[in-house]
Amino acid sequence: MRRMFVLPAIFIVILLAWCSFAAIYVNAAHPGAASQQGTKGKASSTHPTPTPLTVSDKPATLPPALKDQVVSQAHTGHHEIALTFDDGPYPYYTSQILAILQRYQVHATFFCIGKNVQNYPLLVQQEYAGGHAIGNHTWDHADLTKLSRFGIQREIASASAAIQHTIGVSPTLLRPPYGAITFSVRAQIVQLHLIPVMWSVDTEDWQRPGTNAIIRAVLTRAGDGGIILMHDGGGNRLQTVAALPYIIEGLRQRGYEFVTVPQMLKDRSA
Ligand code: ZN
Image (tube, rainbow, N blue to C red; front, side, top):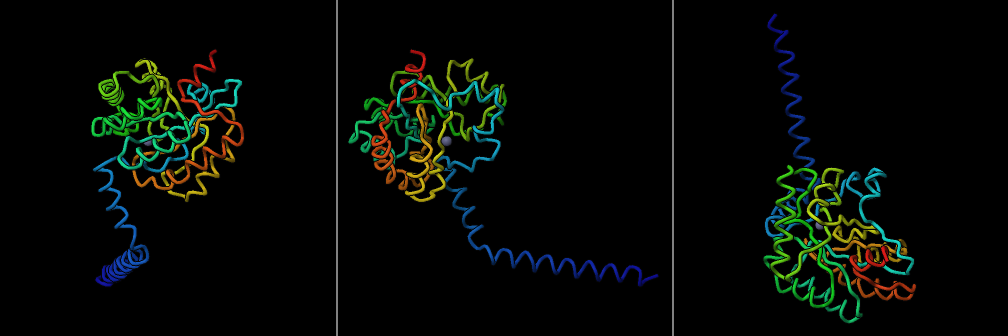
């Protein structure tokens, strides 16, 4: 009778020993995992770091009925294109992007995080004074699909208030962080008198795929009325900064005219 208990006990001990060995081995094989997580946690406490888009977040996979109700591309009948920058303003990168845009006389659209607007108001004022459009990207980069009705309203209204306070004008466009949107989130955005704006070309620059990959993403996929997604905040944006002059020159060579998203929407309805 006693053997009946002893044998399973020995089996469990061997199993536990194997599991702990496997855990030690896995940790040793991926030493970066723990430190990466640590860095990520630290970064997100100072400024929002975009997390990877899940497949369902991507605008291309939105249900067709919802896709029709958000702006991803605006056909104006002209050879127009809109460069957009999310997650700023952020020191260093935003200033460099502004300098490049000024050098090429290009107007872009910045979807700003409310908290960053409050922290770096001068940068937003420079963007606005430079003829760029300012859009709402929520107060602290929230996934709106995970919030209550009240939470969504607070995220959007506080970012709009920060922008209004900083440049004297309330934004008319909103880009939902992570491209995460549902019918009910869209309805609330519209109720707050904002137009939800997505993109037609995702450079995935936040993943730092290399300057050439960012340039290639734009030049191979850009089309009339295209809206290009890039980032000026949320992490190291040196690759985006390095890619920008080549993107502008490449698109100009193809005959594109750069417009802000509000201008593009105006041209569409004209
Ligand atoms: Zn974002």
